[in-house]
Length: 316
Ligand SMILES: Nc1nc2c(ncn2[C@@H]2O[C@H](COP(=O)(O)OP(=O)(O)OP(=O)(O)O)[C@@H](O)[C@H]2O)c(=O)[nH]1
Image (cartoon, rainbow, N blue to C red):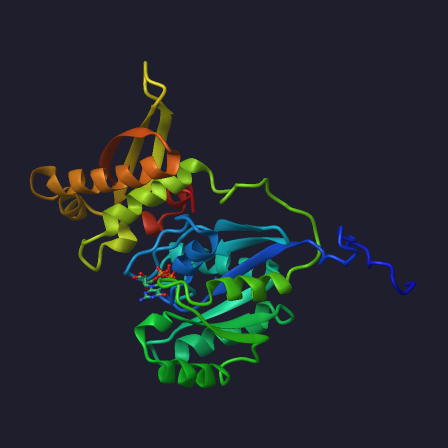
């Protein structure tokens, strides 16, 4: 190439300087359950797209958040935590994870600052080496707001034993510490390319899927520890409310595996379900930007996690 000419994909700005090329591509966060991957995705995207919960393994779908910047478009794929599969659902989830890892341009490996690096992290590192050998991996120490600077430093050192990271960075999704810098590091690893999604788009998940996830998130709050993995939600219908253009009717079904679980979800005289409905409705209204009439019913789908036919119907 002749000196002085911009490389392909580069433009010369008004001030005569060569502008950086536009980049676009895919990233995903890996890490054991509860490492803070969904929360970090939300912090980067700046809105609530992936559901978060204090219980592990709440993320089931590869929900994408899109970070729009003048110089780049970063699409974040949110995967469930990899774990030892005990059911058919578990196996499918692990397949989704591995498939995603092999397809992205860069991986963020999350380890919470307040927990020791352990066998779970080494397992993920070994799996990553198997399916995404050439993908650059950025080590991310999450939740730095929970510990001292000294502990963050120690965690960074401990992380170096786990994998040969392309970069290492401590962040906090809660106070925003270094979230922008992490975005920079991820963007640097993307190939040159045009914008892949229109401006302003934050996720390519269909709205009904997001609505179902918001309902499931509300249903998970405060139930007993054994229930979370037994709840699935489908949105049966989402239509404008008759005679009103500022309101949407949402009809959703909440599935549990056993009749005994139905009682737990409903609560005394259906009180719990009403609370779930009103919490979910507020989030759905924020998502859709309109008033929502939410009709929520509980159904028993016997052992749905182990039944291929039911799994398909519930979208897995
Ligand atoms: N203090 C603090 N808490 C955080 C931070 N990031 C996440 N958390 C909390 O950690 C818990 C787990 O966060 P998630 O984002 O759901 O974790 P995840 O890795 O996506 O979890 P799975 O979906 O189970 O794989 C939630 O209770 C979050 O509120 C952080 O930066 N600081």
